[in-house]
Length: 220
Image (tube, rainbow, N blue to C red; front, side, top):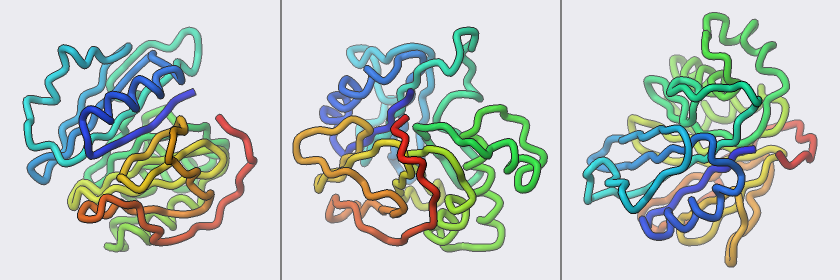
């Protein structure tokens, strides 16, 4: 199990981290958006926010997080197999399990060496970015190839635009710009097959596109 969450507010982000870490504390990550850039922290175990300095940034506009349970008893923590997964233009955190990642590696991401299924999603996004400059259409094209369960936060690194989507796995959002695997008061369940984009001016999530999906209705 894993969880993804995010907020404009640092205090709320830490509350969401606490609520979601019951889904796993094998690994944790924080992404801070500031100065039109991204500052990524990944580490083994839980994050002690009493000592965490958010990269020394005081002008952070948004916080994204991920907590992870180990996928096997023998798995060792490593930076490159921990969320978020990154490419030149995309940064993705994932809760769920893809069932066709090996097939996608053979057909769409032949040279991908990272063994984690989430890496396939990032590779697909990067691949379609080469022929399409519309992030929404890129996301739609990539997600329609996925099978299994997934809830995703997707950051377009060149614009710092944030998107969320799901099929099967849990994901919730509210009208203050927060999203969270675990539900809370005032949160709505994100509909499956819908891509939502965060409007940073209004601090609301807006539906921007739909995508075809094959949900197994399994909450992972």
